[in-house]
Length: 371
Image 1: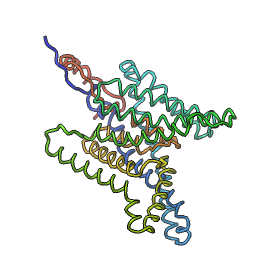
Image 2 (image 1 turned 90 degrees about the horizontal axis):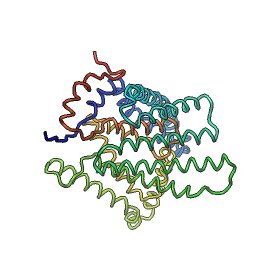
Image 3 (image 1 turned 180 degrees about the horizontal axis):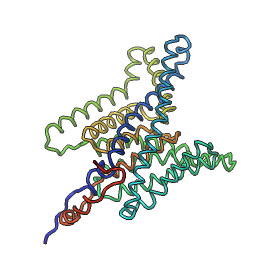
Image 4 (image 1 turned 135 degrees about the vertical axis):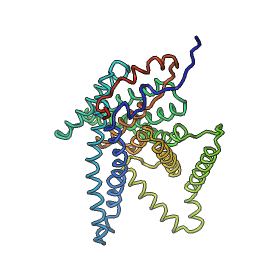
């Protein structure tokens, strides 16, 4: 009997595997994380940048104070949602710990990372605790990357994830090596610390662009007229925005030197806000960051309209930013990469899939029973 192969999900829809509580949690988490990014990590920094204006106008000061307070409340809310989502995933994975080889490492590693984070809330970590915390997070990301790459996937998706993990690894290397040198009392500059940190930021920007190619439905070979039209429109808009932002300083300088100086100061202010909020130093041309933002935003919105967990995962991964200075940002990255692996597809023989269908249908997930 000839055996044909089909692309199938390992155990049905991801929401059916994890349950309605998990499905609702991650969707609310994505919205709350976006508001926390805007209100706390960006607008609060903008208020610091406009301190003179806030001191002059009482309404401006009160507005920034309320927004910052709202963002701080959202920070705690995002942390609790991320903890709940990770806890549900770990509880569900414990029921099938033997079915996936990476779960034997992932479950204890993520559990230890979560317990350390909770412990650090009560007892602030010293340098050694920070190094251990970052090393464990680094190891978890590498295990998740191995789990993602172990499944046959299109090579644009593999390239996107490799670029992303390489970028985050650049920041983690910088933090681990710098803190280790301080712990040992060494005054010498750590080897390649700043070079690796900058390389990691460049890889993060590259990953934000590759997201569109990997998950945005980008293809020149498609025969779908609507998809071709959307691809051409998006590529044209991105190319125009890139060229405009790349040469805006020169064009403004030819038109009015004062206008060009104002644009440079505005760009420095925006760069400072994003550096404090997300860790980007903007040493690359600003146009590259904007193209990456457009590609990432389009892909996340498209995947969300398709009700796919990859959209939530990619959204959380990039909204966490480059510098994971806050504990909940590490949780967002870990959870985002787990969401990418939940909806993975694998090639299985159709005969085996039909034979295993009753067994898969009878497996009920923890916290996922339906009335």
